[in-house]
Image: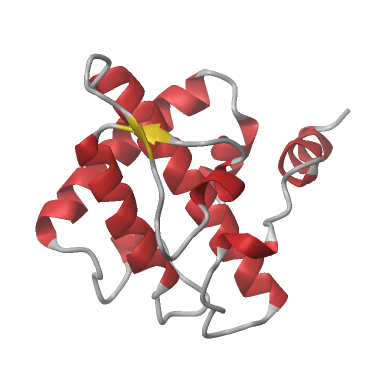
Length: 149
């Protein structure tokens, strides 16, 4: 089995489709490609922040994340439990990513206009740096491909 087919089965397998309930308000650009990309990006953000909180704040009280704008449990595939700073960062990241006016969306570090507030921008960079390495080293091929594309 090739790496590409393995990655496709991993990312497009059962449960990988973005449920209709994930986005409460309809996206500004309703095309299917944009909706899939948004769903994928939000899923990656949730996973990165989950890994970061689980390893950096193991003793912090964690609660299930609920947002008015997104169905996080449907998007993540299970209820997402985060510490208060992680919930705050996830909320900010979801709102900013969903409202991104650029199509196609560039990587944030190459974006001409930065949406994140400076404090959140520093936090999400730290989360991506820490969690991205952990996920790639743990064998998650879809995150490796996400980094390369």
